[in-house]
Image (cartoon, rainbow, N blue to C red):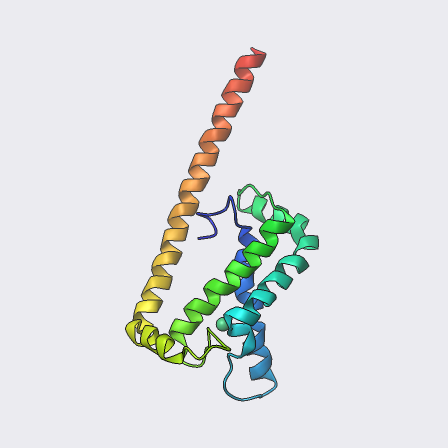
Length: 167
Ligand SMILES: [Zn+2]
């Protein structure tokens, strides 16, 4: 999704938002705080704040991200708005997937829409979610290959144009 919507999304921030939000689980497990392991950060309400803060915190890292993206031969242009939006959307996507996969995620907290969420939970069994995730990963590899091929073609065309101008 990051690759597809890279015009509006900051790929590193969008992807790493999924790691940032799981620091909650890591802390709960490391300190033996017991179940549930998914608490406030795994709700859309608090998750929004987590994503926005991550986007803000990522602002000084943008030069590092640019170098990182160049390693993958991907162009990188970002803005403060893009960073914050990517942080929030990355966390939201993570919470929705976790919410369908794990029984203890209270996506809509503090609203008591548990019944609605339970229905979604029953509809999407774990195997199906795993299959969807694997398909998205395979699709990402395909999209990446297409993006690389098209940027290579664009660069070659530019070189031709430039040498034509010079010659
Ligand atoms: Zn999680």
